[in-house]
Structures are given as structure tokens and as C-alpha cells.
Image 1: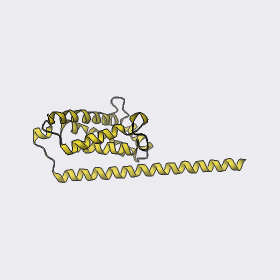
Image 2: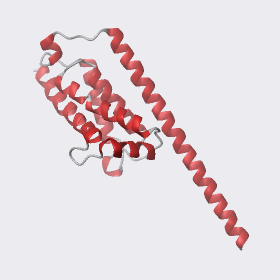
Image 3: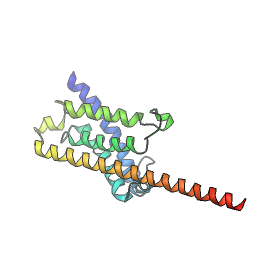
Image 4: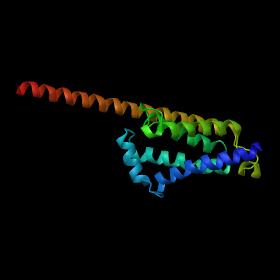
Length: 183
């Protein structure tokens, strides 16, 4: 029964995250495609937008690996990376609920991917069918690369947001000064 539960969890979460990534990657299902995703990434301070947009799309599309239980743990790592970036950038500083623009859904995906990361894909998976087990060195390298990219991305976005806030404050101060000189 545990393996059936893991299959349902993998198919649902991996499939939905992959579909979300395909929206970013190809524009299907009313998605923005890579061009729109790149523009959005630039707008939130992740430059160059094409790099970050492609990284987000590919990370989310790796949900296909999760759904299939193939090359574990690369699928859950992709989801963890993409959803951590989403929670730390787009949804940061907002109430948690999705209706308020918060990170409710990314956090749910993080919890699901984290659970799958530790449990494995189960016996009803491509990895089990083909006897695939990625070398620990490769898994460790993938984890380090993902963690490094997420840390760098969050820092870049936070720096860009701080710079934008500082520019806005300066603009307001200049306008305020102009107003007092014209009085």
C-alpha cells in the first residue's frame, strides 16, 4: 500500500509541477513561454532573465522525473529548487495564503518534494523497474549545485529589490525637495 501511496503522490505532485514548468518552457496551457518567463524574472531582479527563466522552467519540468520515479532524487531536487526560489522571491513578505499572493502552494510543493526526496520513489517506479540507483557522488553534486544556485538567486533578487527600494526612496526625497523649493 505504501508504494501505491507514493505512486499517487508522485503522479499528482510531479505531474502538476511538470505542467507548470511546461507553461514556462513552451507556453502551453496559457503559460508565458520562455520569453514571458524571462521578462518576469528580469522584473523581479533575476538577471539575466533568460538564464533564470530557463532554470525555473527546467527545474519545474523535472517533475516528470518525479512522476515517473525516474533518476531519483533529481525530480524532487528540481521541485525543491524552483519552489524555494518562488517562495523567496515572488511570494516573499506576503501572507502565506495563495489568495493573498503568498507561498501556500510553493510550501506545499516543498513539503511534498522533501518527503519524496527522503522516501524514494517506491517499488512502482522506473528506477525500481530498471534497477536504477544514481551514484551518491552525482546526487551530492546535484544537491550542491541546486543549493548554490538557489542561494545565489535569492541573494541576487534580494539585492535587486533593496536597490529598487533605495532608488524609490531617493526619488521620493528628490521630489519632496523639489516641492519644498517651489513653495
